[in-house]
Amino acid sequence: MREVTRSRAIQASAADVRAWLEPATIVEAEGSFTVVSIDDQEDATVVVASGPGLELPLRFEDHDGTIYYTQEGDHGPFSHMETWIDVEQGRAGTVVTMRSTVSLAAPLPFGDRIAAWKRRGELERALDELETEFE
Image (cartoon, rainbow, N blue to C red; front, side, top):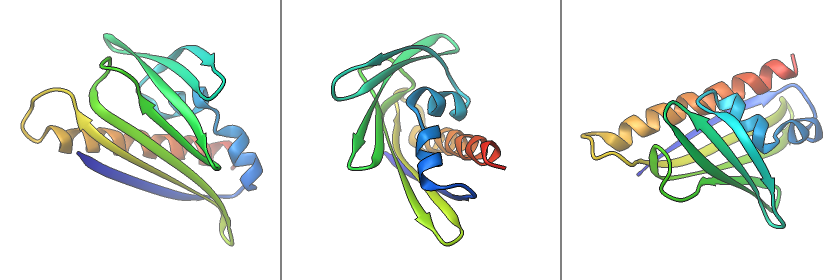
């Protein structure tokens, strides 16, 4: 299992950033999947995402102001994937930190390293999209 962390200062209020960080928006901004459906449940939002040859459910929860989501079940590229998104007002703007732990489902040499590389790119794309939104 590997961990990847990316942070960015966004020139917007924390409230505006949090409003943008909706589950479907996050999935689309990461750039690997499109949203097929959204199921708002009592304690979570489950987004079914589709990509080349697969569909996977992503379960989003709010943990005391931190956005937490994980790949549910065995349908997806990872045997384990969970992500935390923290939003904090700072002097240089609102700092958004995205931290993800991943493990690849396929038995490949250096598989977790490949999964971390892919996940790092997804987090960077999401932060790019967020920054572009508030330019």
